[in-house]
Length: 110
Image 1 (tube, rainbow, N blue to C red):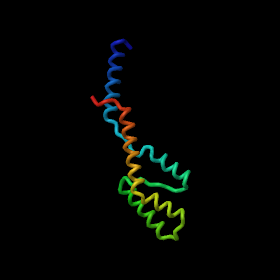
Image 2 (cartoon, rainbow, N blue to C red):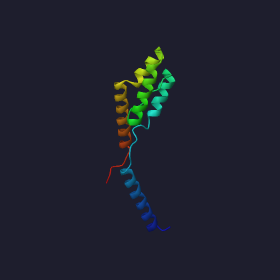
Image 3 (cartoon, rainbow, N blue to C red):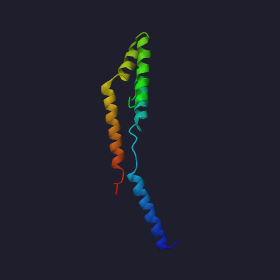
């Protein structure tokens, strides 16, 4: 490969990286499984991020199931985790922070 060909290939590769970097999307839920795992390890409970219709429906179904049974302390904690709007707001803040972190590592769109 000659020097001219190398420069052309290098330039093309740089253009591809810049274009793809500018078009990257961010998945705000990327780190949420770690949050779920930490809660499960520490509390033995699960949390859901009600970000879409499926998550909302699943959480509501779980709540109805829990509320139909005899109530225990563990069930009360699970209801609080599934039905806590402040907790959902914190998950949204974490999602925005994740997006900001990814965006900070991206190249500027030309």
